Structures are given as C-alpha cells and as structure tokens.
Image (cartoon, rainbow, N blue to C red):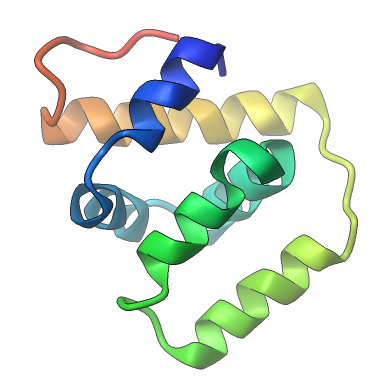
Length: 98
C-alpha cells in the first residue's frame, strides 16, 4: 500500500476503521498487521479490541507473532480486500485507489 493510502486509513476514526475491519477476513487483518507492523499494527488492534472477544484477539496476536513472512501476492490481496471494503462503505469522499 502506498504511504499516502496508509496515512489516509490511519486517520480514519477508530469506529469507522472497526466497522471496516469487522467486515474483512481474519487473513486480511493478519496480513495487514504483518506487512505494516509499525504503521498499522497497533491501530488495527486498538480498533478491534472493543469489538471482538479476548480469545479472538489472543488468537490474532498469536498468529501475527509466529513471524510468518508474506509473499508480495499475499500482501497485495490483503490490501485489495481492505481497499474494496473502504470503497464499498463509501467512507471517503472519493474512491480510494492505491
């Protein structure tokens, strides 16, 4: 994801981000956290924490902690899924293309 896209998504209100993340797959969430740990990791986990069970959050953190290396294709798929969700919710004034 280009830096401009990451920063635009990080500026989303936490509730909005949560709404989008809850519609996405666990694979997408895990991949985004692994691919962008400093840029998006804490932001994603903070947004999800109030909406998922502690057990779900624990499993997600354990999966991320395994140190899996993602292929460029896996990262691109997660980014595409996330961007499609953002665009489907019509949260931003324009369609997000990254």
